[in-house]
Length: 111
Image (cartoon, rainbow, N blue to C red):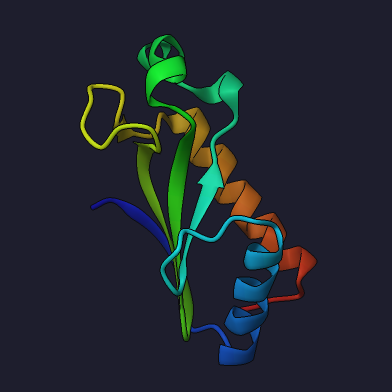
């Protein structure tokens, strides 16, 4: 699995991040796993075409005790297996990495 990893974080900071994500309604039903919504304008053509049946589209974020891991696979919440489930394009990857970096900055989380 391709991912964007930020490690060597403080356990209190990752706990605060997890609480913030939970408060935002992004919990995935498993401790430490969150679904980050993918902006519609950054979906691939096939994802836009399948949005009605397969969407919404998300990327998984795992919050661990001393780090976070953003999966670069775009998942379809409405269907497990489909051609629309594939790795993020470069623009989407850059957007989601910047989003996570900004969220950590807003929470004063430093590595």
